[in-house]
Length: 393
Image (cartoon, rainbow, N blue to C red; front, side, top):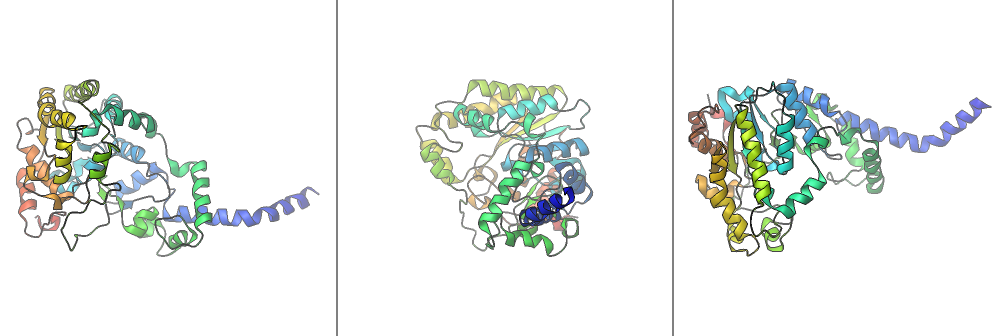
């Protein structure tokens, strides 16, 4: 009787068990659920590998933090997604010393926690830090801090979370056989069985496999884009930055002045890094020209924006950091074409940021190579988005 009951239970469960098994095996084969720790090890050993989950959270905080602990780099880039375009190819002979930790710092509290938990024996001697306007907006920062903080997020991996798997499985059932690669479906899962497993195609996750987008071995982000045929600037953000400024949303909530508390907390972090002998190179990330004009004209933003541009730089330098204002493409001799959307400048602009930083007093210990960077800029095969790395000997 017990065996008969077990057999009937098994037969009853098969209609659900088989789809679940197919679902989980497809995720595993595509590398979508490979643990973040294993991903970090793989990418460190395979410089051409790419990690980009599509169905689950990227595990961004954990991926970057575990990579820092494993590799113990001497130079890192720090900030949110707007710093992810720094690549090891920009650092010449010191390329192996660099790791892009962009994404870990979404607000001042993240920065504080990073400084608090940075190991005492770290090799980090230089931090390239993006200073975001929204960090000093109380309304924006409070929401961001409630959403996610570094100390907790470095321990989480959604790819191993049962509730997250259940949610994605529901989406697959709902979407059925739709061929839309942006939506979980059986058609997308079937792609895991074409062209080999994650190790064979050197790409972990459906975003990396299907769109060639995700994190490179050095922590920088590959958009899977080629240079556009039409260099006319387009803001691909939804909503656009101009709309956000006009409506006072998504990082541009009304702000009469910068939050003094958050400014002081930020400066305390800079001083703490300097006290450990770490060179801190700060820069203001760019906005397109129309967004700059909107910020300067907005009654809800112009006060804070003026402080950000005119007063904050001196205070950052006073804390011992190097600072360059690259909040407009024109500051580095470029225009809006260097940006893929209203928030993210592409790689060529970031090479110019490094040149600007290297020319500042106090940056001589950072290990940057201005001559190497200048050759990247001057190469006639470089374009507003991508330097010609292959032309450098």
